Amino acid sequence: MNAAAEAAVTATEVVLPGKVAPSGLRLAQRALPAPAAGQALVRVESTAVSFAESAMRRGRYYGQPSFPFVPGYDLVGIVEAVGPGVDHALVGRRVAALTKTGGWTTAALLTAADLVEVPDGIGPDEAETLIVNGLTAYQMLQRSAKVRAGQTVLVLGAAGGVGSVLVQLALDAGARVIGTANPRHHEALRALGVEPIDYGRPDLAARVRELAPAGVDAVFDHLGGASVTLSYRLLNRTGTLVSYSIAAKLDDTRPVLLDFLPLLAKLTFWNYLPSRKHASFYDVWAGAGKPDSAKREAFRARMRTDLTHVFDLLRDGRLTAKIAARFPLSEAAAAMELAESSGRTNLGKIILAP
Image (cartoon, rainbow, N blue to C red; front, side, top):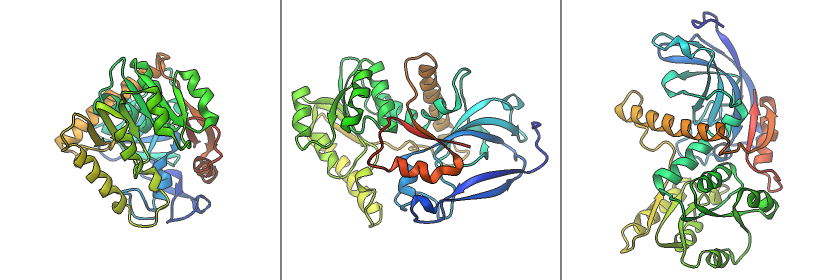
């Protein structure tokens, strides 16, 4: 396709029509116009299923759009055309994008300034595993908790999409890593260098204290709810708790704010105690600001710097892409069912390949 696309492109996309089971997802086609000023048309090569989509189909992701909409938190693809004001050298390049929604499609019109180039030598599926997951893991580890070599960290859900990247980044930084996971994942985690604990054992806290009697330097908690209190108690005197989801409340039926606001209040309250511990909630979109604002430019620069660094670690072999399974886009329902299955046996991210 030429840089200045004249004809409309027809995209096949997965639509989430409302609060439905995965089987309620439907395929649709939509004509995309040529890129407008500042836009790029991206042919999607890889996208994925994340926790966000599972929350959104239940109407439990804070800030999600009104139904119906196209899910898909991130994507990797090739730039097919660009609009006025965008460097034509971008055409033909593989790029990554953090989208929040809209990624489950064969083609997308995106703001060119939001795109991050994927280094040569990295395939689309491998890059896809590290966009929201890698960015989240890296920023929590380095910008929130500031983990250093020699410290001990506890990662809840160490076999999940974010967890499987987080443990690798922590080990690469020289930290000791304790990770909770289903026992079926323990062998794979040990091979990475993680000290695994069965997430379902009733004496989990006691086991962590056996491994780290003085407490851990950081805990990364995706569960929310009562879990964060336990996580905070497992910190040492100067430790940091980073909460980044409320997965334990996924199936609640009450408004999500009724779970989210008490969590934020608890984390804030702990920071006012006469203690050197610290607690925070991580949001990958924090500080994004409004489009075309100075805050948005700073957010883009930070995202590009951090994601490029994570891609470089992958290219250099210091990080391994963990792909749990791969489905065609037309089988998004089956991919989501696997992602939400208690019997899931693979470690890493579930890829959708348009």
